[in-house]
Image 1 (cartoon, rainbow, N blue to C red):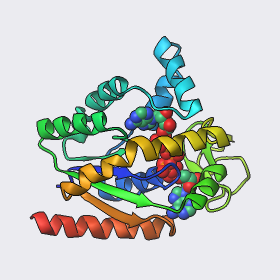
Image 2: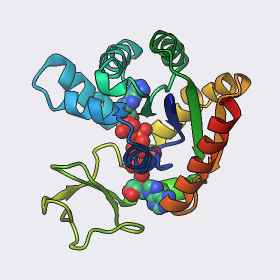
Image 3: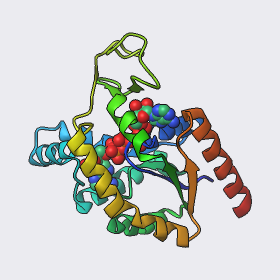
Image 4: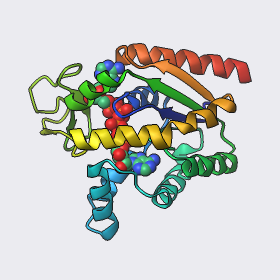
Amino acid sequence: MPGILILMGPQGAGKGTQAQLLGERMSLPIVATGDILREVARSDSDLGRAVKEIQSEGRLVPDEVLARIVQERTSQPDCRGGYILDGFPRTLPQAQLLEDVAKDQVQRLTAINIEVPREMLWRRLGGRRTCSRCGAVYNIYSKPSKIEGVCDLDGQPLFTRSDDNEESILRRLSLYDEKTRPLFDYYREAGRLFDVDGSGSPEEVFEQIAQLLGARERAVS
Ligand code: AP5
């Protein structure tokens, strides 16, 4: 059983892209906290407005909000056979919460760290375009849509995320170094962290992850 797969890596490393490929090919649900929070941000509520501002500025949403979201979403029946976490955990309290969740759900944790040189991250984030309706993700350099600015799947306009601007990217990367990188030691010491080189094509990165997961499955069975 795959258990809980945590996709880690800096902004633009390709966590969302790999989550999509893994989800389709391993038939696992994806719990992407950034997407769930963008949905919350669209709601006409105090929480929605607060989340919208935090996300646009590239800051982190408080741990208590994430705890509620993750506990609720991962307790749904589709997560019983395992799931992919994209964007969670990002802080030590979130990692500790996840330990409890995994214990309660009797699921094994495996963390994949996707490493990409920083200059490449800027290009990926600067070139990202997202469909305003279905959320499909494109890139003007590496995965352009057939018609510029229009989604191939549903013909809707593509937009640039509000946090993919220079100031927010700098803040997100710096928060990543400060709050999220320390989790590597946490997972590495427990023998649960595996590194992959994220600088190749999406398929090449996927191959590395698939091989790692296959080897881990054989080692524990
Ligand atoms: P979130 O939505 O998770 O964004 P992020 O962490 O900033 O990560 P990104 O989506 O930017 O990067 P990615 O690695 O998924 O890259 P992608 O695959 O899209 O979070 C947004 C915000 O929500 C946070 O800033 C925070 O405010 C809040 N939040 C979320 N979770 C939280 C938490 N746990 N705690 C607190 N707050 C939280 O790829 C990027 C681009 O590169 C795309 O265009 C793609 O097509 C392209 N690309 C991908 N892979 C490749 C490749 N191999 N080769 C070429 N191009 C590629």
